Image 1 (cartoon, rainbow, N blue to C red):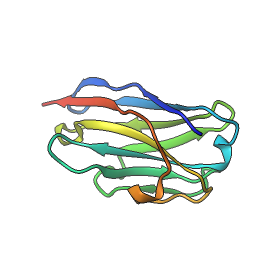
Image 2 (image 1 turned 90 degrees about the vertical axis):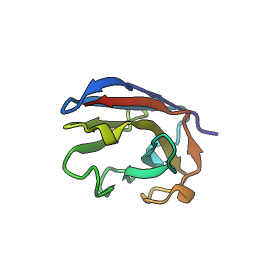
Image 3 (image 1 turned 45 degrees about the vertical axis):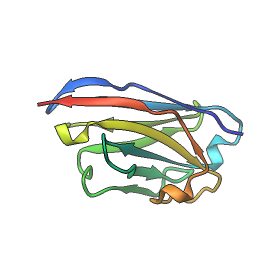
Length: 124
């Protein structure tokens, strides 16, 4: 069993930055691919970014490419999402997810464990 706890959400003005963190329990974190997804009010949850176990393979949604950066520190069992140049349309609950495979995926169904989410609000 893996527990994921997100932090770092909050209110920021458009153009600003936030860094989300996701702390994972368990000794197998380094062998898992990780991902970030988000759900805006009234919309379905969508893929944001994912990273393979080693960090060697990374994927981004087109909507965040060039603005967001996913990274991980396996020694700290933590995955990060650095969000720059934030836009009002980035407002959402952001979820961290883990996959019991070292291979990263962009699909929600490919993830096995989920955090409870952290709210990011971007004001215009």
